[in-house]
Length: 133
Figure 1 (cartoon, helix red, strand yellow):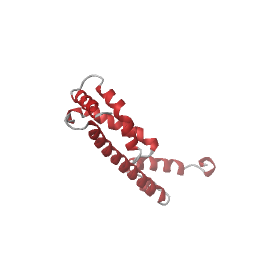
Figure 2 (tube, one colour; figure 1 turned 120 degrees about the vertical axis):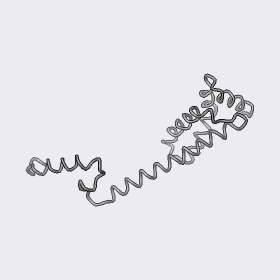
Figure 3 (tube, one colour; figure 1 turned 180 degrees about the horizontal axis):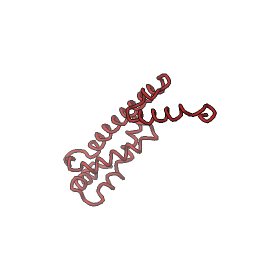
Figure 4 (cartoon, helix red, strand yellow; figure 1 turned 90 degrees about the vertical axis):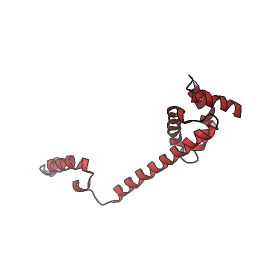
């Protein structure tokens, strides 16, 4: 996209004109998606792309039309990609620690699950082994 076209598109977006976000998405989403695919797994990149353009729409008042629209959008994409990678890393480490631990008892479960786990343990303890399995 040419600099003049993005400048006028940026002005339209910053002023909140109808249809401007759709035009911004049409013009910049291929570039942003390509950028995101370098950092985020390909099957998750489109979800992050949607989050990026949601923020572009939501924070249009923060955009300075005298600056590059593409650079502003890529800055948002960079932050969302980092957030996504961090979130995945935290989820993986929790899952890894959970599965690597020895057999779980009701005491080792997260606090929200302890009550139901104890109830289930008590309920099944009174059953005979033939009924339990």
